[in-house]
Picture 1: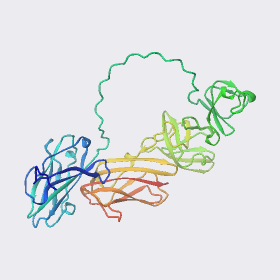
Picture 2 (picture 1 turned 30 degrees about the horizontal axis):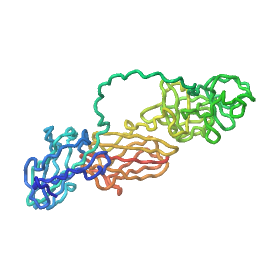
Picture 3 (picture 1 turned 120 degrees about the vertical axis):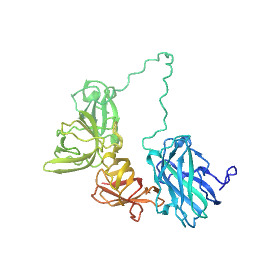
Picture 4 (picture 1 turned 90 degrees about the vertical axis):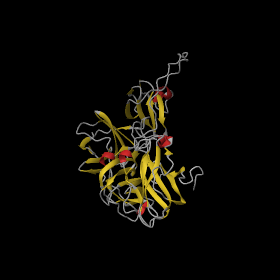
Length: 450
């Protein structure tokens, strides 16, 4: 592959495709010398490549080098240099050993300088050939960039524009339906004083009061009385209605039994409530501030129900009164966060230092969906991290990894065991161990029943 303007130092500046690790970046190929051209020592052996706008803020995550004809003696060694920032991007240069075609088998693996790895739009990147070996022909370097967690392409806030002219006043609208539900009153009753926004169930449907009134069977019985629509608004009809379900998706806890703190991740309630508070049920409660949880399990014994819950790293129970209790079976009731952070509690092992710990999870029914991205300096051949709760079945799923700074073409493997909160990640699906040095990273998604 050549470039007529620079035949010795050709470059393919087009991305080869998405980053195989799916970090959100891409892989670039640099043809420093054509396959029949001798490799020679020199700075800027490759015509400088300019970082495009969509790579602004990304980091160099992996580097690999290949030759067309291997050196008969001596190492081929190169440095990746950011000309604009005047920085070497590798602490240990990438090399291809004598009689080898690729750096992936090198005795000394390349090490990326994390402090110099971030690039900006317009940075000029080049390849310096420091050692050429003997009789080496053709040289290609692959650089993999990925998105830095938390990075955004959003620019600074612009200045506020001028206020537009006042429009003409519109016509008065009709009176709207009542606002949010004030109280759940259970089943509708005759001769009962209802306030505006009180909610009831009747004949399998749910209704909310449009105005304060004392109920009368002939006049305002929901769905039946002669003038019921004057007093009630239908929320959900027949099979669509859920006992106590408000418009925001939450059901008020109308049982006489209080929720009582046991631990940061459990509470106890008098009576048997295991059918109501089953796995996957969403909870909303008040302890000075509003908190959200999901039920991991519930059990009845000794006259009480013990409920195990999790709010990830975002929410935990305090040893204090629990008030304003709600539950929901809806996928996304109002205010519910959807996913919970688990980064601070995932406790990765197999690293001397960590660059990134990014773990989040969500729960639907009795299934957990967990996303993970863990990156750092390896000091062991193993890699584990802690799950928010234990699976109920064996699970093995593919993920992607970097080992000793090299992007892995083979998929890595994440294994889960029954009743264990430890996730075990191997470098390959066959269970190969990691290199106990250099950069090590894994990223993927796993779902499991609990």
